[in-house]
Length: 265
Image (cartoon, rainbow, N blue to C red; front, side, top):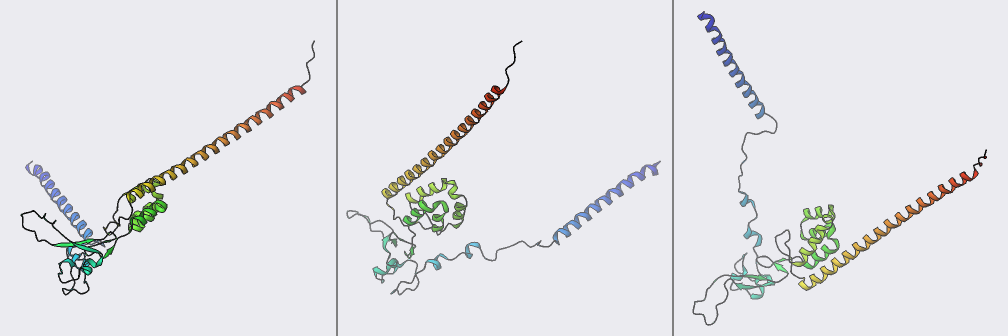
């Protein structure tokens, strides 16, 4: 009895060990197969150079070499004391102190600080050597060709221009919104520089009101013509129905007239 009672326990233990070994083998085979698939790599990707270091250096991007400067390439021409003032800021701006000047009756000592370029309206950049795009040009393109994305293409936003072209200006809503946005204030280009503010506010208001008035007048004319065509179609249908009913009534009366009268008994 003891041997018979012990055999089932021994068999169950051996079966359990066999199942565990089979499970482990299956997991091992799956791991090897997954690691040997084409395109799979067990190496963790690493950056040999930091992303911020891979970008173009700001000093290298905006450095200038003014004519007559003895310092070589510089980032701020206002720091070159020996440079002629007409050559500072590439001739498209003027040097402005960082700190505001103190009043004459102030008893505080003057603060000596750096000075930087204050660019003219149509120029931008640390040295005023980048010409801004025109707000007036963008505004005109937005009014007349904005439904096809011409304003976005001019500002450098090619992805938005394609989306605007495919949707026809967002069915007109995006088009009108950009007309008001571009004309009311200088917007940013793809280079993160704003356009030159060469559109006066009163001119924008006058043009935008005229634009919306013409647009509303055109929509009203289109709606009136659409209703006239609809009414004319309804009148034609009513006339055709009346003619058909008149013809059927006449034929019915003629058929009644041709029938012989019944003789009275």
